[in-house]
Length: 472
Ligand code: HEM
Image (cartoon, rainbow, N blue to C red; front, side, top):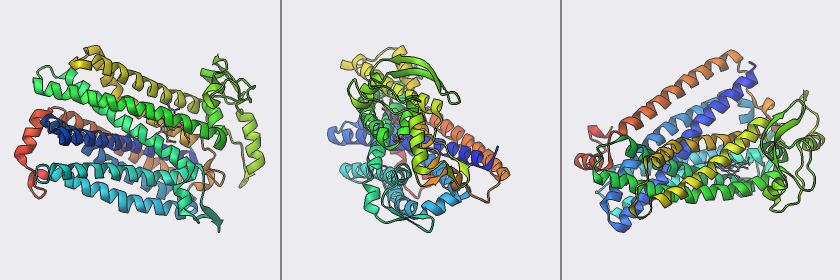
């Protein structure tokens, strides 16, 4: 394998792994803050026990997320030095805000939240929880500001072969950012709600000797989780739909690939439900529904969709057929984009449907049978697949650019890094990630030996002092 392929593999591996934890922690802390708000509002102690119990799952995901984020930054510095030189002026400010503002808010309030149960007024403790949520959301804002610039550069001047920031406000009002932030956040909240609902279902399935009080807490957890799943699956579908329409004009190659359209369609565009595309012959074998692509793209039965062949010609005219002596074509990996899009949207529909069914079967204090619980438990893993599929579309669909229209992937890689070094660091990171995943899963499984009632009692007995030995 050459240097570029190994560097791209490392970027994909570190990003995908890091993004397992980002929506996990953003989403779970939001659900936990909702539970604590219900405790403060009603004074019902079972909400407090619930908050403490699921709060611990959030803390575990946050800790591992920080470690994976650091590895992500290492690989940027090591493998993408020319990209960093080109983008440093743009990337620097949002990244500094993320570290100095958002991360500090998150860490400070996590500490306050963990150690001040029953030591400060309920309302103040709840404020700490919502400040953690605020920290995680602003953290996403800063990182996505940089990512959105890469998808749709704004507010910059090209000088000395670098993109220099000329208008920070333009970066923050980048339309791409509005869509990305909305979609990533609704996806993250859906992720948190699905994980907590699924784990509560696991507990109900696995433990046959649960006390009635614990059973009631898990059932209530599932109800809260499913209401949030319903809201945020709808949210991610709504924002995703607007974002998709935006890519039609802004990144037509990405859009055409997600629909496997090589040749520009007629006025009434059919929608290919499933297909295998041949990137060499441009042949697509699939099942079509007449007019549906026009409806999905423009909300009416007419409207042609530009095919990849036509878009490629336009891009070659705009950006050239060679860049730095590399022959350029602007096609993107069509099968990966096509199937990723279906996986992401399929899970959105499934989570919406299952949360709706779940709320119906558990209404008026009903519990739902074991089959239902198994489905909800297995869905715990689905948002990870949907999020990964989403990022594959966003990042691979931007090829061959790292910064759209300005800087290519080939130009971005470090000139001095060797294939041997990359192979070595890939193996090290892979081992590290596998170890981290095993540790996290082990910690979650071990923690789930507890149940909310006993866990809350244990915690109260400890009355944790931040300087006490048990706090570490
Ligand atoms: C019908 C439902 C959905 C539609 C129409 C949709 C649409 C899209 C589109 C068009 C993109 C690419 C945007 C770009 O490159 O600029 C995208 C990316 C993404 N999607 Fe979805 N999506 C849906 C559901 C979901 C769900 C349920 C999740 C997660 C649980 C999710 C997570 C993501 C993520 C993480 C990205 C990458 C970040 C971004 O570009 O916003 N999506 N989605």
